[in-house]
Structure formats: C-alpha cells, structure tokens
Image 1 (cartoon, each protein chain N blue to C red):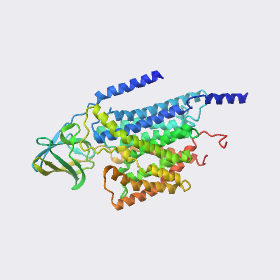
Image 2 (image 1 turned 180 degrees about the horizontal axis):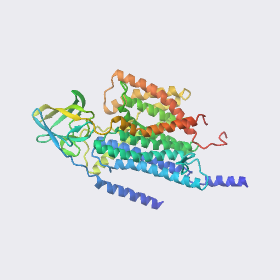
Image 3 (image 1 turned 120 degrees about the vertical axis):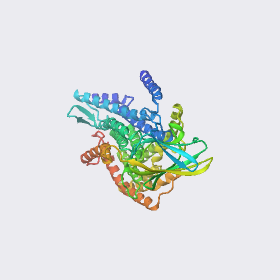
Image 4 (image 1 turned 120 degrees about the horizontal axis):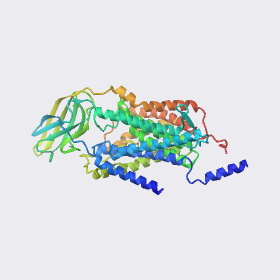
Length: 172
Length: 368
C-alpha cells in the first residue's frame, strides 16, 4: 500500500514538474496589418494568418497608437452588414500591451467588417475596417466532419437497439 | 458435505473486506470523475485565462480520466479472459455477463467492454482532434465536431460505468454507484448537448431542449434501474453536489493554476462558472416531482420534467449572467419542445432502466 502511494505521489510530482516548463505558449505572430482611424485614434489591426478563412482560428491584435492605457472601447463584428457579435476591447492574453482576440475564428465566409468604438483621453471616436474578405472554410464539408464525429453516438444507439430487443421482459 | 462446502464459501466471501467487483468499478467511476473535473476546469481556463497547449493541467485530467477508466476496463477484460480460458468460474457480479469478443479471443464483461470501448474511442478521436487543430488552428471552440466526438467517447465510458454498477444494484455499493455514475453522466452530457447548436431549431433553443431531454432521460434511467423510492432524488442530489462543488472549484482551480504559471486573468472575466451553469439548477425540483408522481405514467412525469427545465433555464441565465429573457415565441416554442422531448425521455429513461436491471445476475431466490 505504501509503495503504491509513493508511486502515485511520484507520478503526480513528475506530472506537475514536467507540465510547468511545457507551458511555453506560442507568441503572437502578426503577418498582415490594416489601419483604421477611429476618431482621434490610429488603430493597427494585426492578423496572425492571412488571408482569413472561415472557421480557421487566428490571433487578432488591435493596437492603438500610444498604447491601450487610459482607453477603453467596444468591438462590433458585422457579416454582410448584419451585426454578428459585440464585446468590450480586452487585452490579448498573450500580448498584453495591445487589445485582441486570441485564437478566434470568424464562423462563415463572406464580407465582414469590424467596428471600433474607442473612448480615451482625446474623447470618443469610431472607425470601421470594412470589406474584410473571409474565404471558404478549409477541410472536408461539415456534414462529413459531423458524420465522423458522431459515430460513437450511433454505436451507442446500435447497442441500445440490440439490448432493447433482448430485454422485453421486466425483471424485479 | 455439499452443505458444508456452501457454508464455507459463504463465510469466506462475507469475510472479504472489499466486496468483489467494487475496486475495478470504483476505478472506472473515478476515471470518469477525473474527466468531468478536467472538462469543467478546461472550460473555465479558456473563458477566464486563455493560453493553451496540449499539456495544460485540465487537459492532463481529461487524458488521465479516460486512461484510468480504459486501463481498469482492459485489466478486467484480460483477467476475465484468463479465467474463462482456464475454465474457472467467472463472477457475473464483476461487470455483468461476459461476452465473446473477436471470435472467442476475449471474454469481456459487458459493462467493462462498453467503458473500455469509450476509452479506446477517446484515443481515436484525440487523433482526429489533432488533425482538426492542425487545419483550423488551436481554437477553444467546445462544440467543434472532433470535440463532440471526444465528449461522446467519454460519455460511452460513463454509460459503461452505469452498467458496471447496475450489475450490483442489489448491493449497497451498486446503489450508490448507479446514482454516482448516472449523476456524472448527466452533468457531463450538459456540455455534449452544446453540439446541438449545429442543428437548425427554428424558434426552438435546441441546447435547452437537448438539456431537458438528456437530463430527464438519465434521471429516469437511474430511478428505474434502482426501482426504489428516492432513486430519482439520489441522482438529482449527486448532480446538485457536483454542480455546487464545481461552482467553487472551477474558478478557484483556474485562478490557482494561472497564478502558478504566471498568467493573468483576462480583462472582463464575468466570474460565472461555465460548466456548472450549464447544468439545470431545476433538476432537483424535477427529481422531487418524479418522486411525488411515481404513480403517473413515465411520459407524463417526463413531460413535466421537460417543461420545468426548459421554462426555468432562461431564469437561471438571468440570475447568473444577468442575461435578458428570450422573446415570447422562442420561449414558448422551447417549452413546448421541452414537454415533447421530456415525455419521450421519460419513456426512454424508464425503458433503459429496465434494460439495465437485466444486467444483474439472475437469482433463484430473488423472491426470498
């Protein structure tokens, strides 16, 4: 029993010890930028992959000139002119000096726009990145991906059908 | 002489400190609980902190959960196979009747066969998920197809755990185990139903209707396999305890782990525990209704359960997130769907409970 406990403790220690150094997070690599003028604020929009494809996640960075300190704002996403999402501009978890969206995907292809409402020392201002073209999603059609992913469910249903047919009587 | 032999065997078995079958059953259940802990922690990590690798602690809990359940299942299958090949008696109380797998290569108790299959599928869907992330990026979308495949695989292990304990439903540990395993499966399924967002539901909130369907079905299944007063309530209480513990644990563990790795919390963290808030708080009320209306047909109590869950789901979100109430059309449509799916779930859950009762070894003296 003591040996087992020691072995378990050793395994846990190894796990904890080895996982901490393994937590080396990918840096945010900006490969393409766009400029947006939101009233008095110059914003640089960064993309970690380009072009943007539907459902493919990437890091977005939103960097105001002179930094984010003392400023706040809202990001609203539109697809084909229809509002899809809005959220406060939050610092990027892996690039804290700028705002951003970490490993975020735009779900559908088409023409998207990003509207920035920024408030800061120079007062409020709005600006928009228009006509962000999101390409077709990569990979197999979603129907096929869902078919592959729900095989366990259909296997379970098959098991239930077999069990159903073999257990018609009620037992006490 | 024969009588003396039987007496000796009985006294020997009663002298055992741990009932036969309890240890591997507990290891499988423990593995599924680790998976649930890993899932609640991982969801909270992504919402409150963010940065991700293959080797985060929540991920290791998820992998370890399936590995532990899978290895325990494999060990039982191999031991049973060895006993069957030596023509030794195989105790059907350990995981149920052994079935032949791959011709007669393996003799696998049916409960452990199911739990082990779920763990093996988890490995396969892990590879599918890796490929997916390579193509689509390392997003934190819980309801991507491979993630739903992984969640379904873990659910199959959890179904196996319910079966393993249902075999021993005549024993105290079997009763507690069924309530524990069914409660774990129910709590976990409230995340898997997020996959229903991919379905077109018209005005119906498919996730709320799905939550109602699966929670009523699993609650009824547990109640009918135990077939005793308090069975539904036991499952409901297990779920409520898991919900309460995770309500505290998920944000706490996330913050401790973020501190330990030197990562800051996101801006604008809402502080609401993600997974526990997906579990309907009204489930205990449903369990009480099921207990009180035992005389009614399963479809009627099931429909009542479905209505309670879908009607109160937006109220829960209003309290926790401060969300607005859905428009009347969507609300009514979802409650009607809750009634229909609840009725179906009540009937199915009852039938599944009866099916699981067949797993217990037949007793000649059952009437005694």
